[in-house]
Image 1 (cartoon, rainbow, N blue to C red):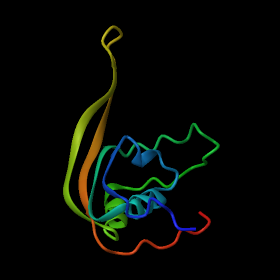
Image 2: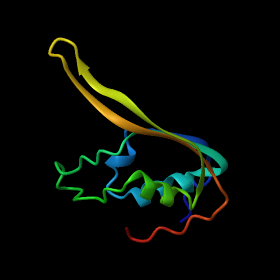
Image 3: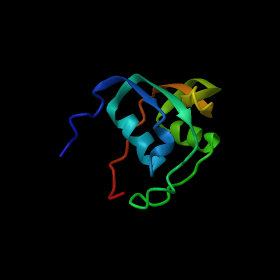
Length: 120
């Protein structure tokens, strides 16, 4: 049946999620599926691809920002993009901190149709 979520959102905000998906193309397609044309997707997070520890999801593709941008361009027009250094976790008592170089982008959904999902 048809998804009730199709073109039902005006905005999508994702943080520290894009690189955790085992299939970035499906992630992009799902974002395009749920956003109305003219809807905005804002994302912030690294492209660290730390999935080696989870055998259940296997090894996903580790795409560069340029490759992800190409996938996005099928369904979105990118208005802003910027690399930002950000702390993810910090412990002042142990002086431990994790810093990532993150991609921020803001993109507007175009009117390109989203293809039906296959058994991916």
